[in-house]
Image 1 (cartoon, rainbow, N blue to C red):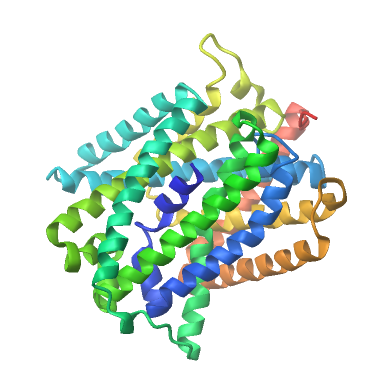
Image 2 (spheres, rainbow, N blue to C red):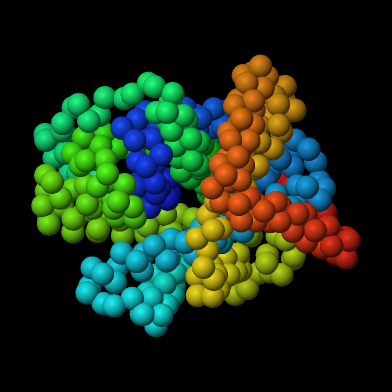
Amino acid sequence: MAVGTMIGASIFSIFGVGAKIAGRNLPLAFVLSGVFAFLVAYSYATLGSKIISNAGPIAFIYRGIGDGVLTGALGILMWMSYVVSIAMFAKGFAGYFLPLIHTSPTPWTVGIVESGVIAVFTALNFFGSKAVGRAEFYIVAGKLIVLGIFIMAGFMTLQIHRCIPAFDAMHLRGTLNAAIIFFLSYMGFGLVTNASENMKNPERNVPRAIYASIGIVMFIYVSVATVAIGNLPLDRLIKAQDNALAIAAKPFLGSFGFILLSFGALFSISSALNATLYGGANIAYSLAKEGTLPQIFERKVWFGSVEGLYLTAGLSLLFVLLFNIGAIATIISTIYTIIYIFVLYSHYRLAEQYGGNKTFILFNTGVLLFIFSALLLYQWLTQRGAFYGSLLTLVGAVGVEYIYRRFSRRVYHLPH
């Protein structure tokens, strides 16, 4: 699920943007962003092996800083980031699917496809973690086969001179900016902790799944970037934008490659939607059960405890049908970075109890604060509305949580 979410969230959707920012240094940017992800993953893996809760990072933050408005607000922010991400994936699926079946993208056809794909994966998630995991295995396997063909065929026609990184000031600045943006495309590894209660031997398997998923995805990102940069002139890759990889496959695979990569995109988006819906449902149910969301979200019904699933899917459907959420994507990135910072802060406070090197945690926190500052600067310079939106989203979550706690008098009660 983590591999499916990470690859589905970035390699097909914002690859062209990365090429524009980093240029020929794009493979290097993916390496650097992967290193950033490993630094954060150290805390997730250490705490996730000891604190078994589908609330994931919110459970870590609760143990580290206790119950309060801030903890609850971070829980709401995390859940909403899942909701909006699902809506984004549904829109992306419709964008690839309709041209493939030669259907014009009208509001009706787009809405039908978006509603249908959410309904299909909601039904799949209804059958529980085993069905989700089994489906995710086959979806990710199909996607990796497509990318494997792209990588192997592309390496045979690689023009090495296009892939040699440049180390002048302009390219190094672009590499750093791209690494900061693509660092957030590794955020799917956190889904591992949102399934820890459903996992066999989580003490052993949570760290293994986190580190393995990042390693697999980093290898794929770097290989795909190298093939794309090495086979297609940079200006054409940048011009392609959303379907950059499908265009990049044409020089060595022709029309077959374009169709193959389009199907790969559909597999990627499907797996990302599937895994994110599962994680979002777990977040909603766990946070309700433990006191952050209203009790109705954990109410038992005759077919099981699936209100979190229905609520997550329903709100995602509302977003996808009613709103243009392109600008919200960068706000989601900011939200996740805030959550990461508090996870690392919590790990520092819990290191003596749960393990971890405090000096290393402090170093990782410093790197993350730098990334967060650079992200805000990037928003301020290029997407001023997203900058203000990030601040308003955080303030809004704190306000909602404050009002909810004041009237409900519920407290967060993470099980021991």
